[in-house]
Image (cartoon, rainbow over all chains, first blue to last red; front, side, top):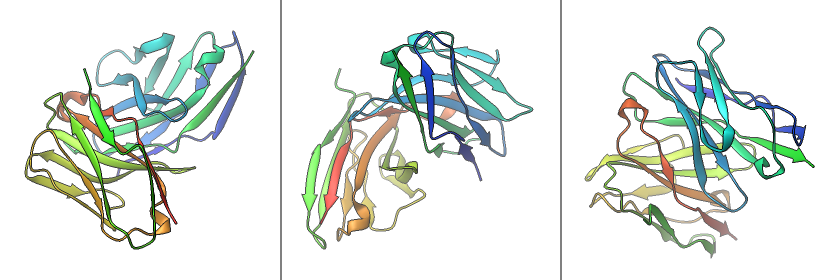
Length: 114
Length: 114
């Protein structure tokens, strides 16, 4: 069965510093991997995804993520954090062998301090 | 461009009452789903549909019914509300789930069962 783990409930960074939000996954086939962001009282917004190809994926708002097959990880990164990046971030995985279910992690709250 | 529209946004129910959360999308997406979001548990899949007339259970289907009579609509019915169903509910849609197509979310429905 597929699963996603986000090992940190909260990540705290200072504005201007680089940030990393961690995600590891488990699927039986090739993974489709996604990052979403949720602002207070809003739905989830798509940030970026990995389907195939280059292991470094660039997405919205300056975010990027690196797919590491050997470590089954898909960590979200940004070179310089902004206070406005403070939100709840979800990693998600879908089994690329044709399953219809997308499984989400528990979420990591990012807090960027000015 | 409306995207995924959910109603109502807020609802308070008494234990044992029934209600329907409405969801509509105007993107001609085949795949639709319902998730619930609970603190520390991320998003859990309740039911999903891969096309009109086709529905299937997700991770936590008990206490909920769905139907898909049209491509556009995917209502979620609570048959006899329980306090354990207090949660935030998100409807989502995607063109299909091949090639890692992105899932789009509605704004959420906050449900409290007293």
